[in-house]
Length: 96
Image 1 (cartoon, helix red, strand yellow):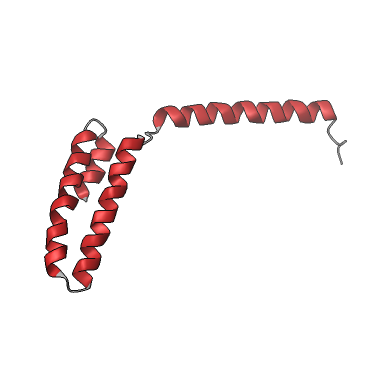
Image 2 (cartoon, helix red, strand yellow; image 1 turned 120 degrees about the horizontal axis):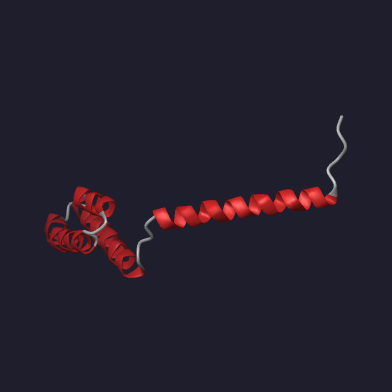
């Protein structure tokens, strides 16, 4: 059995771990895309319209379901247009 690590060695190991975590988090931040607030709000509105459309269709209110297609599709097109510079976002939004 080895000797237990000294307090100084533990502190150094902890500092190295924190340093490596900072490096990893900064690399992740640079390589990931964070959706801006104005786009998230539009996406949330798109979800609300989508749910209204689906609920109306399931309840048998076809007129409301068909009517809700227009704003749902319009917001999806606007979101796809605004995020066209990010290929992953564009593909995701076009798939909807």
